[in-house]
Image (cartoon, rainbow, N blue to C red; front, side):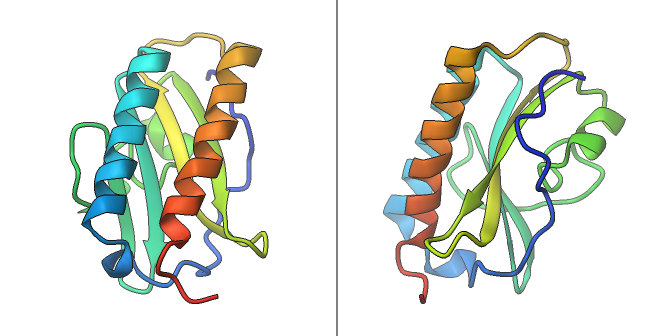
Length: 141
């Protein structure tokens, strides 16, 4: 499989709720995933956010969170689930809150295997920081 930038994919429950993100932040996360999908020229880019009500995914092209399932490559932004759904390329990074707790994942995947360049990894890291900031807006400390 392609590059797995970081292998910390277990949810800690630090993210309180998708419900408090607000429409502006949801749209911004949608824009962010669309940018990542276009920049990496991949089939799917998403932000996965586990909360008390389950796991939610915000995908490029869809501005509202949808329930995540393991039958779907975006499931929990998990490289093994992505592989089981035919994805050969996976690049993902954890989203962390101010205390360093994992609150979600930013991931990109594609059916064709390919490398991830250092420049692309740098952009992914920057976007993960932006996405984490958007996710923490309105969340309790």
